[in-house]
Image (spheres, each protein chain N blue to C red):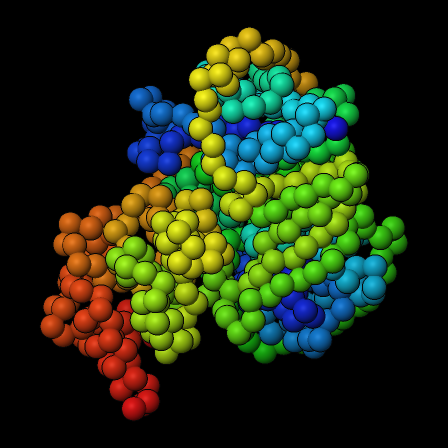
Length: 247
Length: 321
């Protein structure tokens, strides 16, 4: 059984969001970069659990990015995984990235491809479905539970107002979210071991870019909170009904 | 040339987010000087011609047992074929769980640039640029789609539904390909509750409520308002409330008209999930709670005293004694 786990790099959840170069680039200087939480806490950890249940499982991590990403790839390897592949490419176009990953995935012959449900920076929610389409595989999104029995996966996914339990044959692409696994912290043994695990760098293939970011902007600041006395909270009801007109 | 919108259903009924997507598609069509059409996959209990009230001229309906549940692989093929056959240049989805599974596949099939999370109509004065939410609602990106065919998934609660007069013609469509590989073995719906992602009003509780036994305050206020209930991450982590109620950076991102936060301090990760709400009310004992900076209305006070008074006032407003 071979699992491919897609790893993305995002700013830390508490990072200040600001832009440079005439609002065309995220101001990344001084920002702490992390593994996209959905990729780390849910998809990678669930893959590691599957390997713990069946030690013959092989986990490969894949990332598209420049050498700046190597520290977060090593951190992912410290959590688990046998080797990592970095596609030496940087793009905000999901078609470009997904096609690059799909090409590597095709050669690797994976049974299972995991992604996070989205990245917390561009919130595209697209890579998993795009890889699946490129490889003509079934895809289950927003998975909160994943179990394997032979070559059949049973996956619980979130739907609006509830959950749905699906069964699908491998190979399969799954996007993961909260519930799949519990967050882990790499141990000393993992950190030491990660240093010598293979990190293969591959040259990107010729792929078209279909979209481009023109500019970024920030939402207007709130004009300030209107405080209501705790003695007369019924005033809130009047304001919501007559001023904000939301109830 | 036309704009095609995918209409998502649950148990044969059209979702509210799909009416938003239909309005978005109709308005985009107007902008481009063309008309909007819709595609519905799976059996429906609705009068699909009524989609005309949302500006849709024609509905393609693909029904039958082999498309009775969402299989993104199958649905994406049907939508893509319909798009190509009828010459649509823009394909619109709601960015809900179904849309996020299908739209990227359609994008690959048609080699059409994709934007997920659109919050406004495209700008067409210089190219085709779509404004979308990024950094979990903390910023916006203006993204140019540089291909002949464009795929857009619109964020739920980001675009206002317009309903007028009109009737759409309905044409049936057959699934020419094979059935999917995914079998649905169970569906567990939380019945009687409003789905959080579609709710217009949301009442949310945090650690300030001290324990699950005090949630009656949140649920009573919510049921009076017809609101959905939500919670902060620490509350879901200690299982005071179910995980699907967790809103924030690693939970659900929502954009209701009204978000009432009770006993939530407003950590940056929580704000990321709710800052697209149109009106934010914060009730917290701590005047230094960071949430007040993001709020429209605030009450610095004890929730256990304040909320019952709000409930009484609401009952009076609604004429319930």
